[in-house]
Each structure stands twice: as structure tokens, then as C-alpha cells.
Image 1 (cartoon, rainbow, N blue to C red):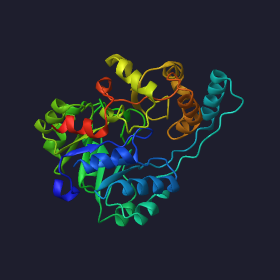
Image 2: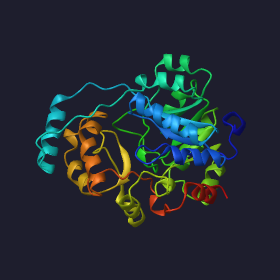
Image 3: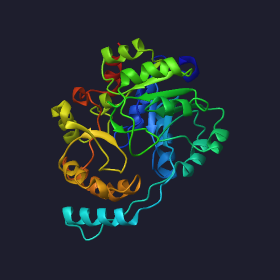
Amino acid sequence: MNKLLQIQYPLIQAPMLGVSTPEMAAIVSEAGGLGSLPLGGLSPEICQNLIRRTKKLTNKPFAVNLFTYEFPERNELHIQNMKSLLQKQFGLQKIQECRQYSYHEQLDVLLQEDMKIISFTFGIPQQYFFDKFKDCVLMGTATCLEEAQQLEPYVEYIVAQGIEAGGHRGSFQTNNIPQIGLFPLVRTLVKEIKKPIIAAGAIHDNQSYRAAFELGASMAQVGSAFISSHESLAIQEYKVALKKSKDQDIVLTKCWSGRYGRGIKNDFVIEIEGQTENIPEYPYQNSLTQEIRKKAIQERDIQNFNMWTGQCGMYAQQLSTKEIFQMIIK
């Protein structure tokens, strides 16, 4: 397996939008793991820029990650209700909807840049995707056995995302999502699926890394441990909040994007969670909150942007990506 991916250690740096950087991905790949770039929802131009920046930093393989879902029908009532709520809460005259790009719009860039390792989440791409990338190493995300069984014919590896994992759930459905812990999920997939399984969810140190292989996983994917790294995009206030967080501060919520994700509970989560019947589906809610989140980050206001983290994010350390990687694989 390591030979197929051309890596020395069976560790993938998770692709985390708003956190991962070309520098982070390149350092992990240079250290012998597999770095990853998150591209979900980004414009083709930004995708190409991120890929080329990474290529300048390493000649080792790295992966790109796509959000492979189809846009649901717009519910104008929910969108207008949410706009009104956000306008009132933040004293805004208007809520600007930001453009969200589909994975269909990103594929030409991946072909142009000759990307050979592609991971995807939120569902299974359309058949033409597999025709275009038949010579690539493909990884799909599953949060239950049924999803893994659907993925199995199409991919070389399956990422088993336990409920402990930070950020967006990779579930095929946006509602009534599977909530299976990493231990039973990995054991089930190892028993029932013939493809290699990659464990993801609260793997943050050497002990949890080794535990993944005891469960039968072939690789481990690590995300939250890198949030506080020097190469992360996370602002210092995010890193401090992560360190101070307790286990019950970390919750599943769909208030930020319309799709369930795990992160630190703050004032925005508390306020919007009370309006669950009005939260538009992903990506429409994500579009509505994007400018609010961007402004909050600029103002270093941790109460009004999403601080994604897995269930053990409080153990993240402010070290270099290389130091964190070496501590995990030691």
C-alpha cells in the first residue's frame, strides 16, 4: 500500500478547509507521510494556485480532496428566513450569498496538474469522474457500512470517518447521519470490506495512531493535531480556544454550513441551533454565513466563526507540522 502511494509512513494529513496549507501538506509529504490539500467549494483558479504552490515546495506525492455532492434544490423560504435572522443578529442591511463551486468545475484543473491521488467526501461522484481519473489512486469517505459498500467498487481506499472526527461529516446524507464511533466502524469495515481501510477520528498522538492499526486499519488520517501547527491557517485565538476546550464543548452542528460538522460550541452555535427548522441545506447555509465568518476571523472574534475540531482537539500543540508528524509516528 505504501508503495502504491509512494510514502514511507501510513499517515495522511487530513484536508481541512480554513486550516490546511500548501506548506503543511508539503512538510508531511517530505517527512514520509501523505499531505493533503482541501479544495471543496473553491474556484478552479484557487485550486490551481494551491496545487502549484505545493508543487514548488515538494516533489513528493500529495493528495487533493473534493466535495462530491450534487446541489440540492433551493428552499427559498428557509433561505429568506435565515437571511432575516442573520441580518437581525448582526445588524446587517444585507446578507450576501457567496459562490460555492461544484467539484464538476474543478476536474479540468486536476487533469491539467496531473494529480494522481484524489480523495473525496459527501458522496460518490458521477461515473464520468471515474472515467477521467481511472489511472489515479482514489479514496472515498464512509461513515457507515452501507456507504463503504457503495464506495468499494470505485476506490482503492476507504476512509472510515468515526463520529469523533472534526469538521464536516462525510456522510452521503445531510440529515439522519450515521453516528458510529471509530472503533466499531473500523472493525466492521475491516471484516466486511475488501479494500484497505483508513481510520479517521480523534487520532492525535502515538498511542491513538497505533490503536488504529490494532483495529485493523491500514492507514490513519490525522487532522485536529495539526490545527495548532505553525503552518496552519488557524488564527492564534482559535488555537487558544482549542487548548482551553473541554470534551463537552465539542459538538455536532449544522448551523455553519447546513451540513453536520464537529467543532467548538460558541455563541453563534447556541443562537442558530435554536432555529434548526430554518437552516438551509448545504451549500446554501455555508454561502449565507461565509462573509460573517470571514469578518469574525479578521476581527479575531471566536464567538462567530466555525472552529472545527475532533473530539481530542484540546491536545493539539503549537509546534511545527514536522514536529507533530514525528511525535505521532515515533
